[in-house]
Amino acid sequence: MAVNIPIWPGSSSFFPGDTPFGFYDNDTTFQSEADSVAVWCAQRLGYPLSDIELQDIQFFTCFEEAVTEYGAQINTYNIRDNMLNLYGSATGSNLSGQKVSPSMGGLIELAEEYGTEAGSGGNVTYYTGSISITAGQQIYDLSDPNVVSLESGTAGTDAIEIKRVYHDAPPALARFFDPFIGTGIGTQQMLDAFGFGSYSPGVSFMMMPVFADLLRLQAIEINDTVRRSAYSFQMSKDRIRVFPIPNGDAFTKIHFDYIKKADRSNPLKGNTGTISDFSNVPYQNVEYCNINSVGRDWIRRYALALTKETLGWIRSKYSALPIPNAEITLNGTDLISGAQTDKESLITELKEILDTMSRQSQLERKQAEADSLLSQFSKIPMKIYIG
Image 1: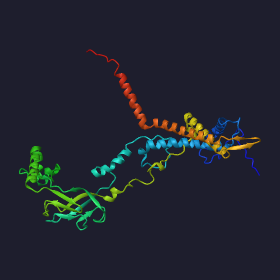
Image 2: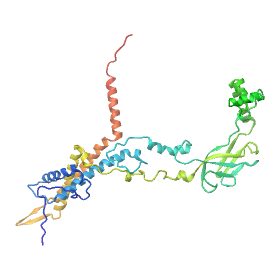
Image 3: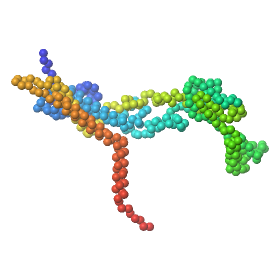
Image 4: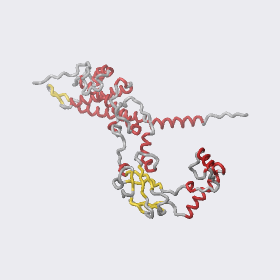
C-alpha cells in the first residue's frame, strides 16, 4: 500500500521543537525568520512552478545547520586568534560575544622555562639544602643522607639538580681590624646608639673617611686572592669537591639551592579545569538575534545550498520516473553537485573575510596606513621660521 507523504504546500508555521537540536528555537528572531527562509529557499528552487519534495522540517533543519556552521566558523577564527591569550584561563564562562584582550601572559608562560634555568623565576620550585663539612675532607657524596640535608626530603630519594652553591670566602668586613677603634665604655654606648655596635670598625664610620674603610677591605680581599687558596668547588655527577681543604674553623656547612628533576620534566604544571587546547575553549553557539545583516545574508545563502543538497539526495533516489509513453529525468545529481560547490564557495568566502579581520592583518593594515600618511606628509612643504 503506497503512503502519500505530503510535500511543501507553499507555507509553514514554525514552532519550538521543529529543529533537530533546538539550539535557537527559543530565539524569537530565529522563530520569525524560519518561515521566511523556508519560503525563500522553496521559491529559489522553483516553487510554485515545480513541486519541492520537502517538508517544512527540512527547511528548518537546513536553517539551523546554516546558523550553526556560521557560528562554528566565527568561533574557530576567534579561538585561533586568541589561543595564546586563553591558555590557562577558566573554562566555566562563555566567551561568545566577549572581547578577549591580548596580554603578555602566554608569552611570559613560555619564557618561564628559561627563568627556571636562569634562577630568575619560572614555574619550578627552588629548594634549599646543606652539606655538613668535616675538617680535612674535600669530597662529599650528594646522595648520602648522613652528609646532605634536603628541604624536600631525604637525600638519595629524588634526582636533584643543584643550581647554586653558596661557598664563598668570609667577607672582609668580618676580619676588619681598625687600630684606631676606641675601647671605652662611653664609645661603645655611642656606637650602640647609632646601630654600629655589632661592627668592628664602628669608630671609623664617624672618625675616618669612608674611602679609608674601602681601601682596607680591598687590601684584605686582594691578599686572600693572591696568598690564599680560592674558595671554589667542582661537581661531577653525585660528588662535590670543595676548595680550600676545610679546617673546621671557617664553616661547618655549605648551603645550596636545587630543583627536583621530576618537577622540571613534568609538563603538567597548570591547574585543572582551565583551557588547555582547542577542544575546551568555552565558545558556545552564537545567538541568532545578535548576528548582523551581513551574517544573516550568508546564513540564508548557506541554508539554500543545504536545502538544494537535501532535495538533490531525495530526487536522486530514482534517476527517472515513468509516465505514459515517456519518462521524466530527475535532476538530483545536478542539485547535489551544485549545492556542494555553493557550500565550498561560501565557506571560502567567510574564511577569507575572517582572515582579513585577524589581529595580525589589522596591525599590518595600520602599519600600511601609517607609512602612507608619513609618505604624504613628507611631500608637504615645510614652513621656514625666521627669528
